[in-house]
Image 1 (cartoon, helix red, strand yellow):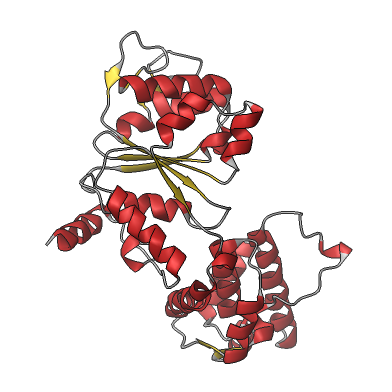
Image 2 (tube, helix red, strand yellow):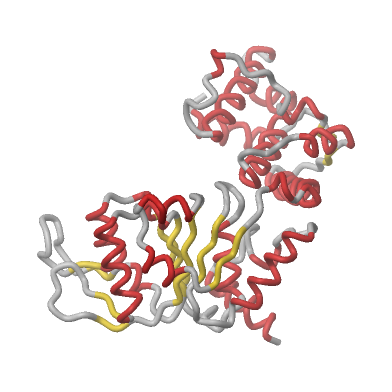
Length: 327
């Protein structure tokens, strides 16, 4: 009954997606240990600090903590601390009153207030500056928030889940992160192992992502044995996010129903001209897709229907890709 209740709440909130906690893939022993820890920690109101490399799934773990808690009926608010300048981050999290600063034309509740009764996920928490860390510590201690420009604080009831991809010991030793704030956040620590340390998850995850992207393009796709062997040999520095991007790229570009090793483009040699650190991984994928679309159009003299057939996608999918990529 509890599981049905959670799923019904998620459906009403519109939050059931392919990233739903109920669809998590955890075949390896280390992944199952993480899931077990999450389910034991979820009913508590204690703060959680998640550590893991970029792309390991820290936000998914935060959503699982919310899903399995008694706060599932409340809001889940996520904010990336790196995405805002110090002053903007304070206003975004704590809120502000009308006229608190130039441009504050109306009162604005911050993330803490919007997450009242639910969970607040603070991603990349170690990117926050010293002044903000001090104010955040006070909020956690007093359980109340003071909007920018306000005179009186407002009480809040929020479960805090924070995450970082930095080595927290280094941040503490250098003085970039406050020890007292660390102790407030690190009540329950959860470490997510990188994908290279849990190879049993690679193929199940790849098959899961392939099913998602095949359904989106209304195609029947499968991974060949050689493609799976190639995946198992790859070190996956970008972790699960890289794996998903590789599968999406293969699903878009593969002309056949069976994805082969070369469709993954994992063994493509890198030269100085490739500029591997120029832009994001998604930028590189978009460049490859753009190139393949251009080649298909050249081969068919601009016939989009034939080009789509060569690429193994329907014409509508080709049109959407061309529109998004400006091809």
